[in-house]
Length: 317
Image (cartoon, rainbow, N blue to C red; front, side, top):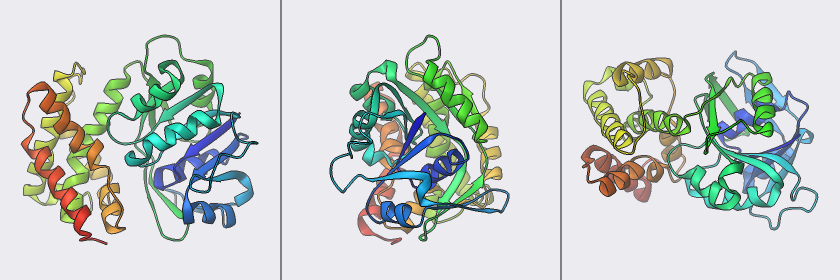
């Protein structure tokens, strides 16, 4: 099987690094200096157990998405495309996925936020698109190193009900062998929204304040803001027909924050590096859905505006 990882940042690096222990043929799609580093140096993966794995550059083929057309020896040869790139690059990555996948190949989005799987499905068809959410914690340093700081899982499912596609079954087995802890779900919308609830609670508040996740519990005002954003998003989810079950949202958030207390969330990492964040597909998506449903979302709207302001001012970079 040939698997392509599209977007080798922190999470993409974890996935690529974990898959390097399997017998699959790997393709890494990155861009610019990041692609050059992968091609020349390989990948340096710091595991949750404290070991450092040096994954040589010859373990995977590297495609620089900015360097021109997809090479002919890669075009239409991949069985799986795992989309890990930032929200702003989803349309471009969907086009690349279409070019590199076989006619029956599957694409899966492991990105934060809403709408990514729909963009893939528009290109590939719903039957060839999986949606997912990843809870492994990671960050990337400036020297080709990916720090896998906490083990989680990968929840995934089809956009349409029915039997699990054969390629998806193989992918589940490969993820399991790679210790990525896959979980198949028949309720893919629940997967995406549950991850979104955590993201709108943790990411904007910590990014704006410039603090690690654990500060949410330590500072009552931050906790109140995080919970308010989460409850607004939950109301939008339920109004959209998503069954969140009887999950205690506050307790769920507290457990996640405690487990990741030393982490800098991805949005804070983006602001510190002067990159655009995924605020549009998080709080921005909640606000947009709220407007279409006639449900006010003032906290998410405020967080969205503040993060966009920091992006434009370059305050952290």
